[in-house]
Image (cartoon, rainbow, N blue to C red; front, side, top):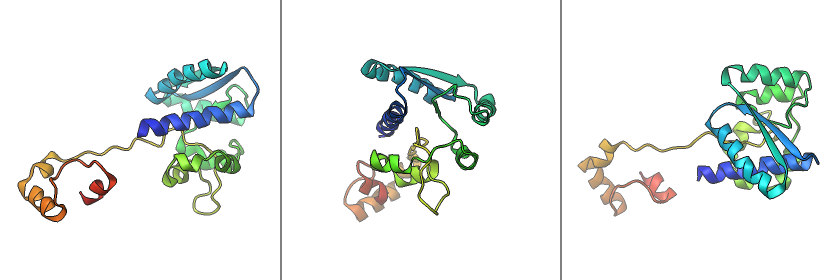
Length: 181
């Protein structure tokens, strides 16, 4: 599920940048970590299907914010896409570094591919006032579930669950199962 969301986000990001320019390449800057390495790898497929080269710059986390805002403040055109950190949203909007994407998000069905919570947390500014979007979330943080084996293995829990729901206690197969647990 998360992989699908990541791929959809990547596709939307690449589509957006391809619309903004008629260049033969797109340059992207992101912090150096596994997701940016995955983006760089996935961009090879984008290049094969569109003929548009993707140039990836990965900056170590400890320097990333400083390098990014130095270039933003200088109005540098060194990158076409900067994958900003979520904490930068308000500052980047107030300082004029981000473009209002509200209409683009609606036109391209971004809301259908992401949860409302993801858009609110990573794209909306100001929060809870206007519903204006300034970013397209690239990865909305991983969602994972961990199950306490001691609770699943506990006979009292197993019996209570079976009595209440008519089936054995086990990791969920459906959202309903998850809510029941």
